[in-house]
Image (cartoon, rainbow, N blue to C red; front, side):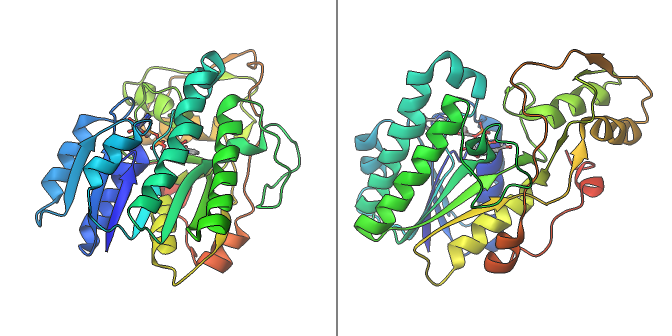
Length: 310
Ligand SMILES: NC(=O)c1ccc[n+]([C@@H]2O[C@H](COP(=O)([O-])OP(=O)(O)OC[C@H]3O[C@@H](n4cnc5c(N)ncnc54)[C@H](O)[C@@H]3O)[C@@H](O)[C@H]2O)c1
């Protein structure tokens, strides 16, 4: 099998490529423009690639011609589309740029999938599509009400996936990730989230800011579980169009997260509680019954275990 991974130099994309290389049965064409991805992730993949199964192309997904040229006449079986402008704040500051990447780039990747004869695409969407609609837990049928260009663009991407599956018979699996965490998350990227920021600070036993009372909670899902979901979807016999929420169904408050890292680093530095930030989504949790029952992702890494791996 041959696959394309866009966003391969990023946090989740590099974990996905790492796992596929370990399985040893898949050739990978990686695409990334290294805007938030890291050269060090590519170096790691090159080290693991003992059988010459990984090729990398430094290309922007806004450039369809360059992507087609890179793929050439190779037949591709599956496409994993993870490349995106991932900063919600940057999408608010520069919606045309994020739209050109997250919508225009996604259209290009769909066209690339068609060009290369792929049977299926796996698209990394986000729980951001739900916005601040308060009903919890979220499932695949929950109301969609994005409150940022990023959330809207991910939803438009999902609709394109659905339309391509109907119009062109390209099978499509959409994953709405909740808060993904794990090794190699870039603490300087503002989408990297609270875990890598706290981890970075508490490893040096410096305190960190908690906005609001710390009781707000998230559904933190370990990166290797997200990778498993992608690989299970890759291996399905057939599918038309499916959406899956990807979370553990369990909640962790921001204060609990802080305390877990205090314990890990044996650091008693207290957090500084600041006024809640406007627009922060306070609570988020996933009803994961569909991904458990329909995709067969039965086990999730417990937070208390995963937090030792970041
Ligand atoms: N990390 C999370 O908690 C989370 C949650 C929901 C959804 N997602 C989605 O998962 C995917 C992967 O996210 P991540 O956390 O690994 O982020 P990341 O920033 O580490 O990875 C994104 C990758 O896309 C690349 N990229 C960006 N713009 C590009 C362009 N124009 N052309 C080519 N490559 C480009 C970046 O260089 C980077 O390597 C993204 O689509 C993101 O929206 C992530």
